[in-house]
Length: 176
Image 1 (cartoon, helix red, strand yellow):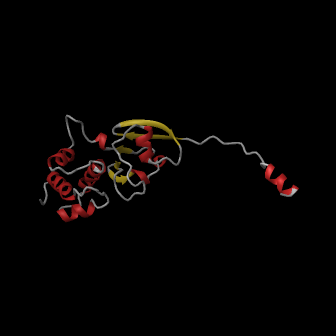
Image 2 (tube, rainbow, N blue to C red):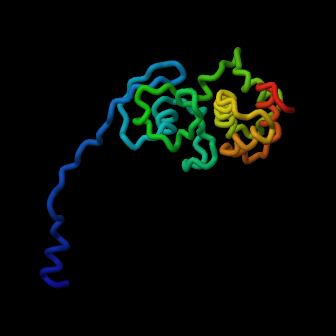
Image 3 (cartoon, rainbow, N blue to C red):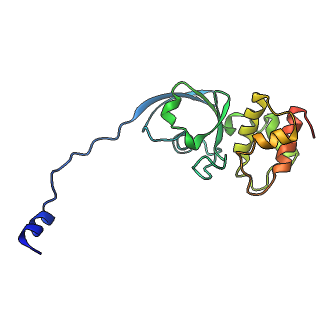
């Protein structure tokens, strides 16, 4: 190694002071409880719920918006929490599976999922139920085919789709 190469390899270059990670204020209502937090700008809603608020009902499946396991309701609209940056939700109202019912007073869809055996392993169930709540609120689906199409963003690896559609149709009082 030449003298010039050796001195370049030994020289670490200019020292750059590390900057603190910027945290931004966030006011968000989750399951009826207002939360005031400071979060890094890259934190997704999914990670905020699971890692910062200890709400583990919302599942991390693909983390790419393709499976629907992380579906929650934002201001009543269903959305994949893995695709939404938490900081963009300042002032929003978020409802997770934990906010839909209680063990002694289940949400009608939770009760229907149990009645129709609409889950097997249960991993996708929180996202399926939150998506179904949004689907019913949208009011566009009136037939089994429309329910299946409008729930197609929520995957079930166990294949409980028929029972899931049965549970949703039961709650909406539609085509069995």
